[in-house]
Image (tube, rainbow over all chains, first blue to last red; front, side):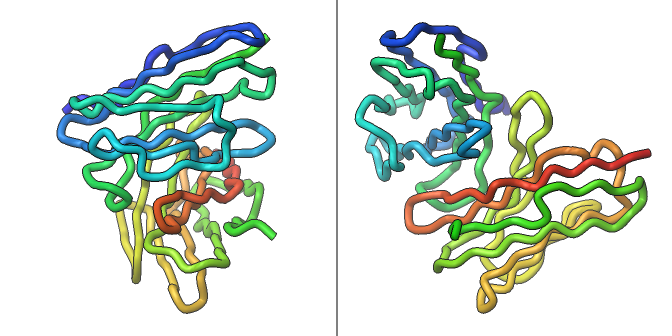
Length: 113
Length: 107
């Protein structure tokens, strides 16, 4: 069974631009959650999607958004990038909504210049 | 005070030693996860616990719901165990993470 796939793995953007990151969950998994990891703040929960609906959102500004498609693939978007958005963005999939083991992707490393 | 506290922050051990990493939390939870992160970023889920004890190979995880405390034990540690170990608790629909314990096992 293929694991969780995140694309792109690395990207560099400049302040003010926007970025879209993609996450393909394990086949059959319906829940996808997103996390931001920075050296200063550690891992922080961004949002969780289940059956195309956002179930919960962490404490991030509205510039951070996401969606989930009918095939459970998910995207997250960050608009008007700031230097502080430089981070490793991880997604995880799980068979069910807020229960069950999490399976993480390798992450997308975003650098904002 | 953080909702999830891990100790120690850093740990250096000799190969073969028994290792314990602790996690304390301050709120009611529905589950607790232990995660492992190697340099380069990828995270692997080691355990998900809601009660009692689980064992997988040389790894053992325990949780005491009444005391709001969990431990991760590594028996017969090996240099390949060197990684960051992260405790995360599920509170409602959110995961709240500890700061992580950096483990280095020397040969």
